[in-house]
Picture 1 (cartoon, rainbow, N blue to C red):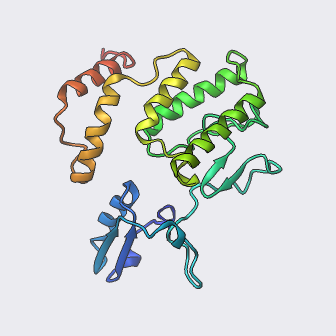
Picture 2: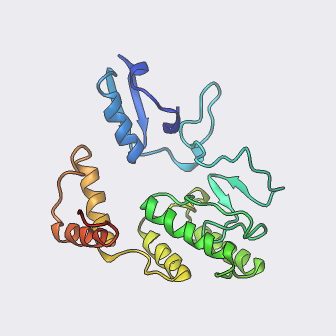
Picture 3: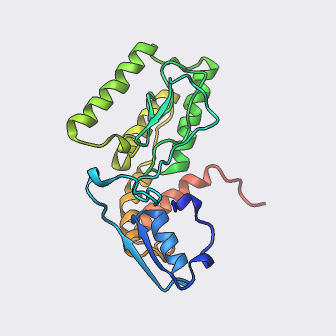
Amino acid sequence: MHSHNYRLPQPFKDQVVVVIGSSASAVDISRDISGFAKDVHVASWSNPADTFIKQNGYTNIWMHSMYHFPFLETNGEVTVDDNCVGPLYKHVFPPALAPSLSFVGIPYKVLPFPMFELQSKWIAGVLSGRIKLPSKEDMMVETKTMKATFEGLGIPKRFTHCLGIDQFEYYDWLGSQIGCSGTEEWRKEMSLPIFMRKMKHPESYRDEWEDHHLVAQAYQDFSLYISPKR
C-alpha cells in the first residue's frame, strides 16, 4: 500500500507493519498506526536500484509512482517515466504545449505553498502576455541539459523533481520572472533547523523552537498582510 492510499489505522490492529521510507508521510503514518498495530518497523534504507522490481503476487512497494495523469492526453508530448514528468521547462511548462498547458506543484521536498504561489504567478504572467517564455527550442535545450547533468552525476531520473536545498534558488528564479524577491531570508534560515527538529522530535517540532528572532521576522512580515484589529 502506498501512503496516498492510507486512511485509517484500525485495519492494522494487531498486525506487524513495515513502513518503507522515513519522510513526512512515513513518520506520520507510523505514529498513527502504532496505537493499533502489534509492531511497527520503519525501514529507512532501500535495496539497491537493480532490485526495484515488482515481485509476482505483490504490489511494488519500492517505487510507486507519485505522478499519474490518466485524464491528460498529450499525444506523447508529456510522459511519466520512472516518476519523472517530462519534458518540463522549470518543472512547469512542457515546451511543445506551452503556454496552453502547465503544471503546478510537481517538485517535492520543498516549501509547498510558497512554491505554488510563485509558480502560479509565473503562469498567470505568461498567460496574460506580460511575461515571455523562451522559444520552444530553447526550453527543450534546457530540459535536455538538466537531464544530461543528472545522468552525469549518476542521479536516477526519479529524483528530477526532488529539489531539497536547491529549492530556494528555484524560488528566487521564479521571483525574478514575476518581479518579486522570491523567498524571504528568514524562511531560508528557518528551513534546515526545522527539518532537523522534525527528524529528532516529530511530535513536538511545531511547538518548540530556538530561532525566536526568525519567528519575530516572520510575524513582522505577516503583519503587513493582516488588517489591524479595530
